[in-house]
Amino acid sequence: MTAAVAAFVLLGVIVFAGYWVLRLQSNLKQAPLSAGSATADASSDANDRLQILIMGSDTRDGANKEYGSQADSAGYGNSDVMILMDISADNRQISMTSFPRDLMVPIPACTDPKTKQTYPAQSAGQLNSAMSEAGPGCLLDTINKITGLTVDHFLLADFNAVKELSNTIGGVQVCVNAAVDDPASGLKLNAGTNTIQGEQALAFLRSRHGVGDGSDLSRIKSQQAFLASLARKVKSDGTLTDVPKMLSIADTITRNLTVDSGLANPKSLLTIGSRLKDVDLSKVAFVTVPWEPYVNDPNRVQIKEPDAEGLFQAMREGRDLTAPKGTASPSDSASAAPTETGAAPTSAPPAYNKAIQPVSVANGSGVQGRAQQILGYLKADGFAQLQTFAAAPSATTVVYYSTGFEDVATDIAARFGLPAAQVQPSTAIHGVQFYVGSDFTAGEKYSAPVPENVVAQTAADATCQAAFGH
Image (cartoon, rainbow, N blue to C red; front, side):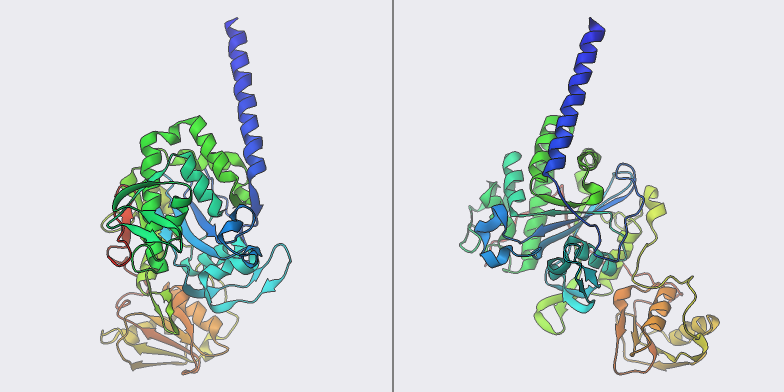
């Protein structure tokens, strides 16, 4: 009898699990991981370091039609939220890195998986537009290009996902230092702590004129504060150890989610969710990519170097951003080296004769003799047409190139470990110019420092947003 009961219970569990797998599977929509320039690696979702690009689409189709016009519902939409979640292999640390939507960056050539139309590469395009032409895979390719990472998966959610999730967990607490009434988003909050869900949760994440200075960068702070509060709520409620709650949340999320094919199996989503249950909230770091006003348009922003490369290098090496010096997690040592930097591998033979390439070294480092040191490294590598000269001080090392010399500049940058973002075209030179800045004063391998105070907050921090005008 006992054996029969046990068998009956086991059968019930199998049927129950099978039902939920089928249900969640039917909820999910999927799209290719890449739009042409990335491939999935062999990492395990259960045991290895894992990076997931979380995107929010501003498309207004389906259940989201009330938030815009019919014209807004066409195509993939722009990505109004871009957060890269990085989970260490030992599950002891997580970074959540936000990318400003108005960031001007190089966008690689992308092919729309639906129409098969290929869109040419852009030397400077607005980051949130990468998805609009060729889908979420194009945005993932762009993030890989500018960070030097190989992102494992993506999750693309719509407006409705926020409403339903916040309702499912019973609301999220947020704080503002003064009352907010923003007609543009519909956000209404009292001064102090408010519990928001449904439409108000969505309004809090969308509001640009209710908090901070009214910019998208203020909205990023709201997103980070909301996600930190969400993490605290889920942790305190014991949700991640409560299977029925986990399945209910998974059901809510998957109804409003598009994922890459590697995540199209609901078991993968539940596996990832289970990895988060024991994470110390003080080790969940919220970060924003360092930025500065875009030189060609003050209404846009660009990556600020060398600060951004300091962050990206720390991310490639799997360092704990909450630690004073950003120490690496021992379990991530195998994944510390960048798998894609936007530069050609140094081991690949060049398709040109090094001896005849015109290369100059400009010393803007402030260290006497630094240009001669770089020249010596290049000479040992086989470059013979070399010259050096003093130059105006520069905070950032850049390799410039004229038309026809991009491959030479890319190889030189890779040889010294410089990121792709610091390889730039110029009409003022002939050949290649290695302009050494004060961020590269010694040695032959570039290592950008991690910016101070790069972590805006951790999930353990309960922050209070400034209301617009306060």
